[in-house]
Image 1: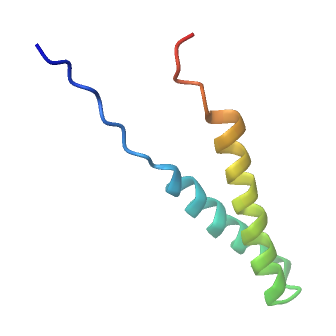
Image 2: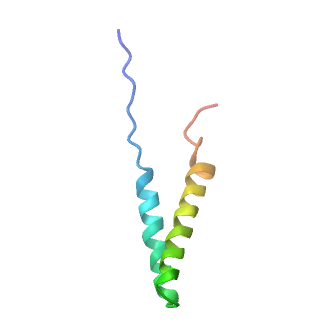
Length: 63
């Protein structure tokens, strides 16, 4: 008998997309100019990367 391996979809892009939109939205709310929209998006992406790589990785693994 062959064992079937479960294929998991990588849905990390959803976290990055939500972080980018949220950061850009916060940057737009500040109303200091277009630059803050970009800064907010970049900070959102950095936050998502930290969240995925530090806090989420390894939670589903058994010891």
